[in-house]
Amino acid sequence: MRLSNYIFTALLCFLTLNSNASVANGAASFFKHLDKAIYGELDIADTTGELSQDVKNGAHATALMVNRFSLNEILDGKLYSAKGQNFFKKAKMCEGENEFLNDLAYGGCSSVLVGPKTVLTAAHCIQNYQLACDRKSFVFDARADLGSKNKVQYFVKSQVYHCSKILAYHQTRDKTFDYALIELDRNVEGGRRPVKIKKDLLQNGDEVYMIGHPNGFLSRYSTNGFVRYDDELFYNTNLDAFGGNSGGPVFDKKTHEMVGLLIRGHDDLIWDTEKQCNRVVYCEEDGCDGESVLKIGAIIDDIESRRNN
Image (tube, rainbow, N blue to C red; front, top):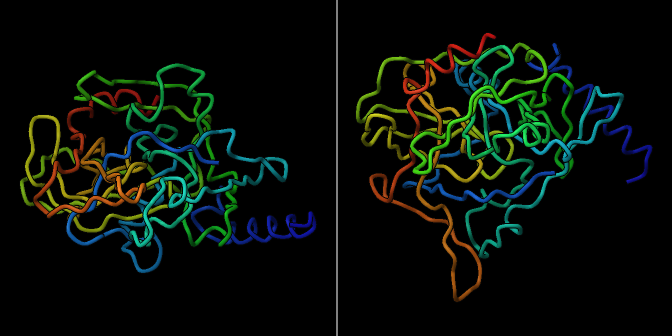
């Protein structure tokens, strides 16, 4: 691309992004944890178009975790660019697999805003030392309708925040606990608000949905899920999920309050030894291992004690 065209594209994107109320105020690594699956029919959609305001609010509070070095700072820090990687090729998917996977990945895990400058994510998404923190950034509203149609996406300053320090980190060997609270470099702007948290427990059969970044894609909405069963710490659900959804918020479909954090699930890809490529794992609605959602009530005291500091 000629330099003049590059600058024009960047400026045009900057102006377009700033015309959006949620942002006017204000290259991705491949992940090791491909441990999610599709239950029944694929129920994943973009967080664009006709969504309720409650779902939009949840989407605004959800951020894509990226490697800081994958963001290119331009226009004196007013704008950032990131180049996506083709997941279909990177994951060596078989021909004819779900078209949903033929998309660009820009980051790794998901995260959610729980305080003015505090995000919650899965502990396995980041290592527990300052150097790892210094290498991570968080992009809010990384959505298809706010970006370009090319591999390169642009984000304005009010969308991009950097890890300042790790406030809390819990990852047991048996993966019972798996969450991290992270302080960002400044308060989050652009009209974004921390999610509302549901302290009451869900019952088996209650409907839930999830917002996040499957495979590091731009923001997606897993629309139809329910609680299959639960234990002291986890809800087991049938939410459609992929690697990259880890650390993403799960919401009660009735109240739109956050009920938990997606941590792990059934393998989402299986290797075809004959074709030498990966295929998507499909499960019955009540089959496979399910997707494990850490109950927010199990960690609420930690969140409450740290998110407003």
